[in-house]
Image 1 (cartoon, rainbow, N blue to C red):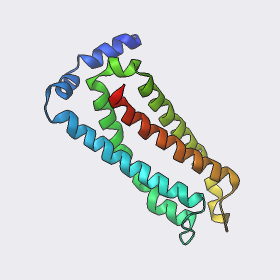
Image 2 (cartoon, helix red, strand yellow):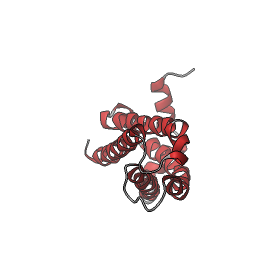
Image 3 (cartoon, rainbow, N blue to C red):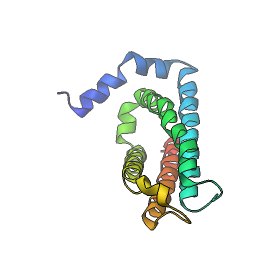
Length: 160
Protein backbone atom coordinates (compact mmCIF):
# COMPACT_ATOMS: atom_id res chain seq x y z
CA UNK A 1 0.00 0.00 0.00
CA UNK A 2 1.48 3.38 -0.98
CA UNK A 3 2.29 5.97 1.65
CA UNK A 4 0.27 9.17 2.00
CA UNK A 5 3.06 11.28 0.40
CA UNK A 6 3.16 8.81 -2.50
CA UNK A 7 -0.62 9.06 -2.95
CA UNK A 8 -0.40 12.86 -2.94
CA UNK A 9 2.41 12.72 -5.50
CA UNK A 10 0.31 10.42 -7.74
CA UNK A 11 -2.61 12.81 -7.53
CA UNK A 12 -0.36 15.80 -8.17
CA UNK A 13 1.12 14.25 -11.32
CA UNK A 14 -2.17 12.92 -12.70
CA UNK A 15 -3.69 14.08 -15.98
CA UNK A 16 -6.68 15.44 -14.07
CA UNK A 17 -4.45 17.59 -11.86
CA UNK A 18 -2.53 18.83 -14.89
CA UNK A 19 -5.80 19.75 -16.60
CA UNK A 20 -7.07 21.55 -13.50
CA UNK A 21 -3.86 23.59 -13.29
CA UNK A 22 -3.34 24.06 -17.01
CA UNK A 23 -6.74 25.18 -18.20
CA UNK A 24 -7.80 28.80 -17.98
CA UNK A 25 -11.43 27.90 -17.36
CA UNK A 26 -11.58 24.42 -15.85
CA UNK A 27 -10.58 25.28 -12.27
CA UNK A 28 -12.94 28.29 -11.97
CA UNK A 29 -15.85 26.38 -13.53
CA UNK A 30 -15.33 23.45 -11.14
CA UNK A 31 -15.08 25.92 -8.26
CA UNK A 32 -18.42 27.47 -9.26
CA UNK A 33 -20.01 23.99 -9.35
CA UNK A 34 -18.58 23.32 -5.89
CA UNK A 35 -19.87 26.62 -4.49
CA UNK A 36 -23.33 26.29 -6.05
CA UNK A 37 -23.59 22.73 -4.72
CA UNK A 38 -22.47 23.87 -1.28
CA UNK A 39 -25.02 26.68 -1.38
CA UNK A 40 -27.81 24.20 -2.10
CA UNK A 41 -26.56 21.82 0.60
CA UNK A 42 -26.10 24.40 3.31
CA UNK A 43 -29.23 26.33 2.30
CA UNK A 44 -31.46 23.28 2.56
CA UNK A 45 -29.79 22.02 5.73
CA UNK A 46 -29.98 25.47 7.34
CA UNK A 47 -33.67 25.87 6.55
CA UNK A 48 -34.37 22.42 8.00
CA UNK A 49 -32.24 23.12 11.09
CA UNK A 50 -34.05 26.42 11.64
CA UNK A 51 -37.38 24.57 11.43
CA UNK A 52 -36.16 22.07 14.05
CA UNK A 53 -35.15 25.04 16.21
CA UNK A 54 -38.74 26.30 16.10
CA UNK A 55 -38.83 28.75 13.20
CA UNK A 56 -41.53 28.41 10.53
CA UNK A 57 -43.91 26.37 12.64
CA UNK A 58 -46.57 26.63 9.94
CA UNK A 59 -44.69 23.81 8.21
CA UNK A 60 -44.31 20.55 10.09
CA UNK A 61 -40.82 19.21 10.71
CA UNK A 62 -41.47 16.10 8.62
CA UNK A 63 -42.91 18.18 5.77
CA UNK A 64 -39.89 20.48 5.89
CA UNK A 65 -37.60 17.45 5.84
CA UNK A 66 -39.45 15.95 2.89
CA UNK A 67 -39.11 19.19 0.93
CA UNK A 68 -35.56 20.18 1.87
CA UNK A 69 -33.46 17.13 2.65
CA UNK A 70 -33.56 15.58 -0.84
CA UNK A 71 -31.88 18.76 -2.10
CA UNK A 72 -29.04 18.30 0.35
CA UNK A 73 -28.51 14.72 -0.81
CA UNK A 74 -28.63 15.68 -4.50
CA UNK A 75 -26.18 18.53 -3.94
CA UNK A 76 -23.56 16.02 -2.81
CA UNK A 77 -23.48 14.75 -6.40
CA UNK A 78 -21.97 18.11 -7.37
CA UNK A 79 -19.96 18.93 -4.26
CA UNK A 80 -17.96 15.74 -3.80
CA UNK A 81 -16.61 15.30 -7.35
CA UNK A 82 -15.97 19.04 -7.67
CA UNK A 83 -14.16 19.08 -4.32
CA UNK A 84 -11.98 16.14 -5.36
CA UNK A 85 -11.12 17.89 -8.63
CA UNK A 86 -10.22 21.09 -6.77
CA UNK A 87 -8.08 19.09 -4.36
CA UNK A 88 -6.29 17.40 -7.26
CA UNK A 89 -4.94 20.75 -8.46
CA UNK A 90 -2.90 21.30 -5.26
CA UNK A 91 -2.95 18.11 -3.19
CA UNK A 92 0.39 18.50 -1.42
CA UNK A 93 -0.27 22.09 -0.35
CA UNK A 94 -3.85 21.41 0.75
CA UNK A 95 -2.99 18.26 2.66
CA UNK A 96 -0.56 20.29 4.79
CA UNK A 97 -2.84 23.31 5.17
CA UNK A 98 -4.33 23.47 8.68
CA UNK A 99 -7.39 25.39 7.47
CA UNK A 100 -8.09 22.63 4.92
CA UNK A 101 -7.59 19.99 7.61
CA UNK A 102 -10.04 21.85 9.86
CA UNK A 103 -12.53 22.06 6.98
CA UNK A 104 -12.36 18.29 6.49
CA UNK A 105 -12.77 17.72 10.24
CA UNK A 106 -15.83 20.00 10.35
CA UNK A 107 -17.34 18.21 7.33
CA UNK A 108 -16.81 14.87 9.05
CA UNK A 109 -18.39 16.16 12.27
CA UNK A 110 -21.34 17.64 10.34
CA UNK A 111 -21.83 14.31 8.58
CA UNK A 112 -21.69 12.35 11.83
CA UNK A 113 -24.11 14.82 13.44
CA UNK A 114 -26.55 14.43 10.53
CA UNK A 115 -26.26 10.65 10.56
CA UNK A 116 -26.80 10.55 14.31
CA UNK A 117 -29.79 12.89 14.00
CA UNK A 118 -31.48 10.91 11.22
CA UNK A 119 -30.82 7.51 12.74
CA UNK A 120 -31.80 8.70 16.22
CA UNK A 121 -34.05 11.51 17.31
CA UNK A 122 -35.55 12.30 13.86
CA UNK A 123 -37.14 8.86 13.75
CA UNK A 124 -39.61 10.17 16.35
CA UNK A 125 -40.44 13.38 14.45
CA UNK A 126 -44.02 12.28 13.83
CA UNK A 127 -44.63 12.61 17.58
CA UNK A 128 -43.21 16.14 17.83
CA UNK A 129 -46.08 18.52 18.43
CA UNK A 130 -45.24 21.97 19.70
CA UNK A 131 -41.49 21.73 19.38
CA UNK A 132 -38.62 19.37 18.72
CA UNK A 133 -37.01 17.65 21.70
CA UNK A 134 -33.97 19.35 23.25
CA UNK A 135 -31.52 16.84 21.74
CA UNK A 136 -32.86 17.56 18.25
CA UNK A 137 -32.50 21.28 18.87
CA UNK A 138 -28.91 20.86 20.08
CA UNK A 139 -28.09 18.83 16.98
CA UNK A 140 -29.74 21.41 14.70
CA UNK A 141 -27.76 24.23 16.34
CA UNK A 142 -24.56 22.18 16.05
CA UNK A 143 -25.31 21.54 12.39
CA UNK A 144 -25.67 25.27 11.71
CA UNK A 145 -22.42 26.02 13.53
CA UNK A 146 -20.51 23.25 11.78
CA UNK A 147 -21.63 24.31 8.31
CA UNK A 148 -20.80 27.95 9.03
CA UNK A 149 -17.36 26.69 10.04
CA UNK A 150 -17.02 24.70 6.79
CA UNK A 151 -17.95 27.74 4.72
CA UNK A 152 -15.56 29.93 6.69
CA UNK A 153 -12.69 27.50 6.24
CA UNK A 154 -13.41 27.25 2.52
CA UNK A 155 -13.24 31.00 2.23
CA UNK A 156 -10.11 31.29 4.40
CA UNK A 157 -8.31 28.81 2.13
CA UNK A 158 -7.88 31.61 -0.39
CA UNK A 159 -5.80 33.51 2.17
CA UNK A 160 -3.72 30.78 3.82
